[in-house]
Length: 199
Image (cartoon, rainbow, N blue to C red):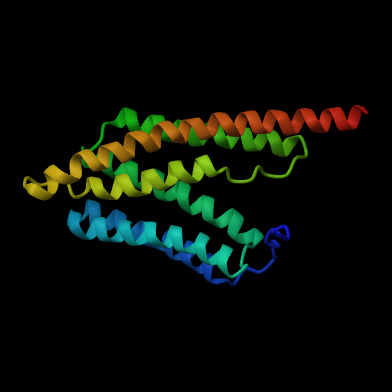
């Protein structure tokens, strides 16, 4: 059976996956206004749910139609980080989640920023996105929108509350686990380069 050939990473910028990532970025201010202005939680949920779908679609299309690009590898995680940060801050402002949870999630991104900066200064290419990090982001992208269905009393809120918090707790734990894995990966890559240079 022939070995699978990995997708070639192109220099193209105008691709469908990149357009979907851009749409996700453009929807962030829309979501913030909806959630903090009229406080239309159902519409806020719809905007976030649509954004989460675009996150799945851009990866699926890139893999299926071989549209993986360097621009997409940069744009997609940036869109995810801004999506997560803005949503959790809005939820804290609305007093749906505690502020300590905001600090826990944002602290992870700060740690990852310094890890990537350290790796870059050692002349190593940016670390590839780990599947554990993708799982963590997916949990957060499912959990945080669902929290907007918990703000009113009723059957929907009763059903949505445990689901939303389960995804949020799982996502937060896996989010930090992925950071540990990235740090281990960075250490291994840098040590490998040092060994290679000293050989």
